Structures are given as C-alpha cells and as structure tokens.
Amino acid sequence: MRRTLPIALLVLMAGTALPARALEGPTPPKPGATATTPAAAAKPRVVIVATGGTIAGAGADAANSATYQAAKVPVDKLIAAVPAIAQVAEVRGEQAFQIASESFTNAQLIELAKKVSALVKRDDVDGVVITHGTDTVEETAYFLDLVVKTDKPIVMVASMRPSTAISADGALNLLDAVTVAGAKDARAKGVLLTMNDEIQAGRDTTKRVNIKPSAFFSQWGPLGMVVEGKTYWFRAPVKRHGTTSEFDIDTIDSLPEVAIVYGSGNMHPEPYTTAVAGGAKAIIHAGTGNGSVAGYLVDTLKDLRSKGVQIIRSSRVGDGFVLRNAEQPDDKYDWVVAHDLNPQKAKILAAVALTKTQDSKELQRIFWEY
Ligand code: DAS
Image 1 (tube, protein in one colour):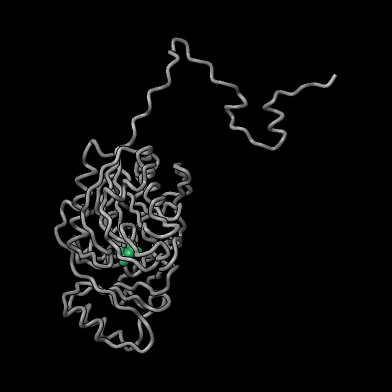
Image 2: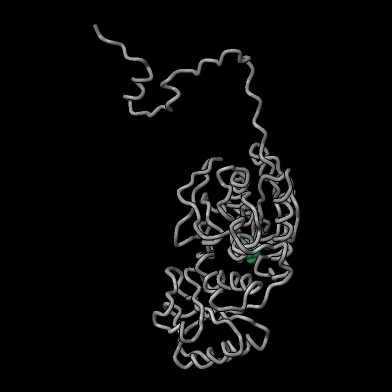
C-alpha cells in the first residue's frame, strides 16, 4: 500500500522550503484568548527633517537623471509621494533647510544637530530621518554620529536621481530610511545612511561614484540591508558614537576652522600657510600614499606646528589607513594621523575634537577611538 505523505513533507521534498510554522500547523489559540485579531501594533513615530539635495530635486524631463535643480521639493510633498510610508510609521515632516549640500556651513551643521538632539529627547519620537544632498551627507552623518547623544536611530537619506527622473531612487531610499528609523534593531548603531537597499554606517560611508545610484561605499562594508520593509544586519560599529561619545552638541555653539590640503607631486607651501592665515586651527594633509609629506614641505608643517596649528595626516587614497611613524616621524614632529578616516571625515572629527582639546596626544587618542 502506497504511504501517503503529509502535504507539507511532499512540498518540502519538492524543494520548496516552507516556513517552520507551516510544518507545525496552525498555532492553537491560547486558553481564554478571544477570536479577535490582535490589536495592530502601534507604529513607530518618525520625524523626517528635510534639508534639500537631489532627493528634493526636479528635472525638466523624465530623461534628466543627472541634469536637474537640487533642493526644490518641500518635505510634505516628499512624504506624500511615497504613500507606503504611512504603512511603516507615523511620520511628520520638518523643513530645516532647502539647500544643495555642497553649500552646508558649520553654522548649519550645528543648527541641524541641535534640532535633531531636541527631537530625539522627545518621548513621542522613536527615530529621525534626515533627507540630505549626497555631496556632503557623509560629513553631516559623521558629525551627528559624534555629537548627538542618543541610541535612537538617526537615518540619513539621499538620492542620486531627482524624483522627476525615470527610475528615480529617492522614493525607495526614503521608505527604507523610515523603516530603519522605526526599527528597534537599528538602535545604538550610530548614525546610519540608507541608499540603494543598503544600511551604511554614517562614520564609514563615503560617496565614491558621482553619477549612479550605487554611489556610497565603506571600505569596511555596509552594516546591513533593507529589503521589502525588513532590516537585515551583518555587523555593528565598534567606534565611539552617540551615548558613548564624549562630545555633546548641547555644549557646542561653534566649530574651529579646519582646512584640507590635497597632496600631489610638485606642491608648494602656500596652500598650508594661506589656510592658517585664514584662521585654520588644524590642517588635514590629504597626502599621497600613506599620508606622505614631500620632503620640501616638512619645514613648513613643522613651522605651523610650532605656532600651535595641528597637523593631521590623512590620505588621498580611498581605502586603508594611515600608520603612525611609518614613513613620517610623527612622534618627532608632533603630528597626528587620521587612521582610516578620509580627509573630509578627518576634518569633521578634528573640528569637534578641537572644541575640547588643543593637546596633540589627546587628539591622537580621539582619532583612534572615534
Ligand atoms: N548637489 C548635490 C547635493 O545637494 C545633489 C545631490 O546629489 O543630492 O548634495
């Protein structure tokens, strides 16, 4: 007699993996349970703070994926354009700025951080999304990571194509950002960026491509992904941030000036001396290779150091990290190394650190820890 197998087992044998619960059969009702559907779980409460950028951009024609005007669409229209957001969270919008992010100033960075700090302190806010241009979102993300003392998710989001373009990427990026901002498993992971289905660490991520949606990368990889409204995590940050940071935006009202000088062959001292004459308290040397300094520039940097200017060696090379005392005698010259931070990230950390210390050894400790 042919044995008849339970259907579930037949389906499994057919190679379709069934979720475990299907194999166990329906869950028996708990004694005393009423036959009503469980109360819909309360949706997380997310505030979307808009600052401008391409995600708020508009082009003349649907074929314009790269030719458009940034910072045109207001936050309420951004939210209304993605009805699926309402399924994910209770959201409200605030328009902080309406600018292309290459135009951000330190004053606007501080204003935005203070706004976000006030929002995350509220009991009726579970997470914050910040829409932003792609050009400097990596700096804003790292700044907020360093100075906003919270474990609540703060999620940056941008887009490479304007909303008016065919295959615009902003809508799904925004839906993903709201999903992450409302996700309990996104807490205490630092400031995040959702782009192109990925969840990037605000500290690590940088814009590496300037003309396609897969523009953001971290040499240490994304923290996770968002797929169809669900977060998938594969790693967590180890550097200090948020509630483990020694910095607090509530005690910062201005940032010292820090300048970046880009390294190449055949350089001259003027970019360094002019930056200091203009008020720079630290120079980020975006050196060739492992942050190398041309022999003919060493005296200029030593002279600036002797006048109290911090010299911080980063690299123009995208990946890897600058080693202390490798080709350059940092101990001897009292220089600092930026570790794995690219020049623009090193500039943010140096400015924040200089609000607390002028000591180069303390500065180096901070560059190891953040
Ligand atoms: N100009 C760019 C900016 O605002 C546009 C963008 O890519 O978002 O950063």
